[in-house]
Image 1: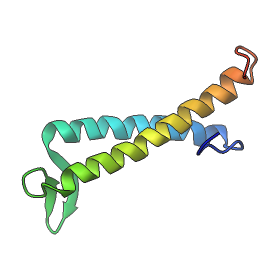
Image 2 (image 1 turned 90 degrees about the vertical axis):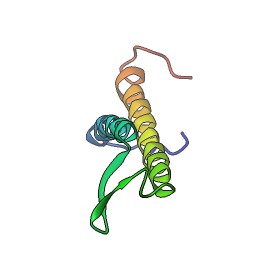
Image 3 (image 1 turned 30 degrees about the vertical axis):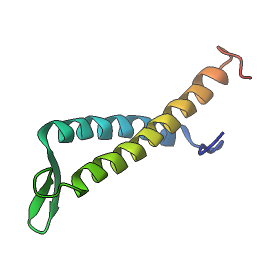
Image 4 (image 1 turned 45 degrees about the vertical axis):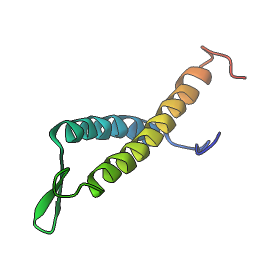
Length: 90
């Protein structure tokens, strides 16, 4: 499958899935507060003092977290649902 390894361990799959959910929740709060809690040159990144970098960081981190969520979710589906025989794979 595209961007998914067949030999991922169960721990890695769950780590990707749960970690990406945590990152997406963090990014939701970042978007609500307009503050990215990463210090840069003695201040944090906000929408007002970094108008270009703030949305780019949200898009980049959200894309990486979404990819990880998809990889983890699909890996869990393949390892625990398809291989256990509950659903037939195509």
